[in-house]
Amino acid sequence: MGTRDRAAAAGAGHRGVARRPRVVGGRGGAAGVTTFVRGGFTRAGFVRVGGVPHHVEVTGRGPVCVLGAGLGLGWFDWDPVVPLLAPHRTVVRFDRPGLGLSGHARVAPTARDEAERIVRVLDAVGLGGAPVTAVGHSLAGFHMEAFARLFPERTAGLVLVDSSVEEGLRTLLPRGMRVAATRACGALLCTTGLPRAVGPALRRLTAPTPWAWLYGSSRVWRAALMEYVTYGDTARELAALRRRLPLPEGAPVTVLAAYGGGSRRWLGRQRRLAHALDASFRVAAPSGHLVMRDRPAEVARAVLAGGPIPEPAAHCPG
Image (tube, rainbow, N blue to C red):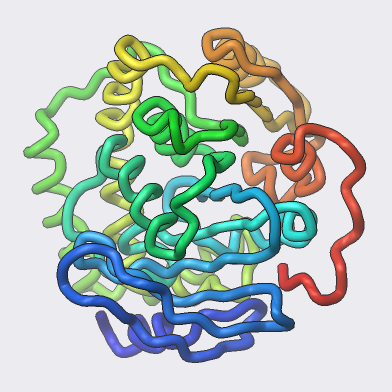
């Protein structure tokens, strides 16, 4: 990691308030999480999974739900939702390798690897017991559905938040060539200083956050590029899992689609996804793709399966 990346890994906190957990665990598998407490409600730190430090934040009490952010996004993108869930759920957020505050990605992602990552992170923070509600936004919808199919005994429910949907996606080049080319392209971009020059501004333009400066990191750019280039592979891998492995019996599935007005084509694709998964279908409107920022209460309702959503409590960090 560069100097600023190391500073990031040392300063995980909300709204720019940084505390300093340290990376723990040996080079082997996952280890325990180093924690700090804010108001007795949140613990955060790092666990090693596959030799990579993963930033993890655990908030609240009750049954566990794990939140997965979309392509290139970070744990902080769920901030508006967490205060609504934390009085009722133990909320787990973590950054995939290269993103947020986690260490550099070592390998290109696959659906199976991401599903296994969820298991190992949950185990590392001591939440490997009861089944969890898996909540995935956009690309992470693929990851969470793969988790539910591969680990049905660990799944209490599945919520797909404006999830990626692909039908018949094709790629022209073999995966190995695309991965190698992406690594070379990422290295070239980073030597030009482009991430530092434009990354934070682009992030602020699309979705303002106090953590926009993370997008000046070559680590984040490389990880996001790799997720983008392997997106089709992940979609095809999930399609193969759908043919072989059913979703866990009795676990409720919800598809929550964003609608901002205009064309309803995307809604149609989301509705077909819900039908294919035998899921309940909800619409968050008006909302852009980042539903957890635009309509956090709708996301919370989907996770909590209805009922009133309280105002964020003063002691719940969000």
